[in-house]
Image: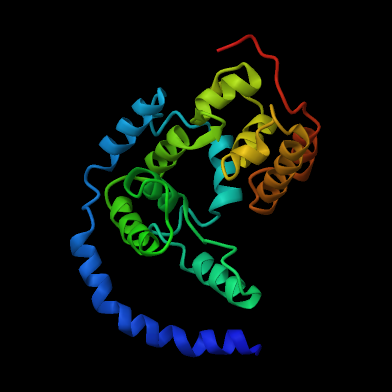
Length: 238
């Protein structure tokens, strides 16, 4: 076993034991999470966008986002321990802070409670708050809230606004390729915005479609067809 991994294996149990009392304190001192929906709505209003209801997220968009961002979203309770451990091992092995292992719930919490930052102490709060929010909101509403307020370009927020900007069509009328592109944009809007960098958007869309195949949401033939779609649409408007 490489030395960094061996040190991590020996250190983790000690760290967990030391942090247990602090975790209990954090649970008491962090917000209850009861106001999460009100916070989402206030944030959306500040950006001039509407909050999607839990039944307003198209199935293929939900599948694309979960496949590329949080494949165990429907199985975990706010924290993906497998993803978190994998990210930690990668960072130790590569001597960097390259992977965060954040779930969709954690990303929502980061935006509505922590001002968009999960660095340092905020990361610990992020984990605790994610657990609390999952006790209050169901998975479909968490995903809807996240997709309502997430940054999707320069000064643009929410997938509904992005659908109009990129494809001149309402969110519920997009194609598989368009949903995959939207799912890919959310992690790095300044890089994958198709109006700014269509080649990067196309490559990112291909990654999303490939992951959807891996997760058995679509077939390889569907992915190939969706990958051949134009990056930008020319619909009738929103």
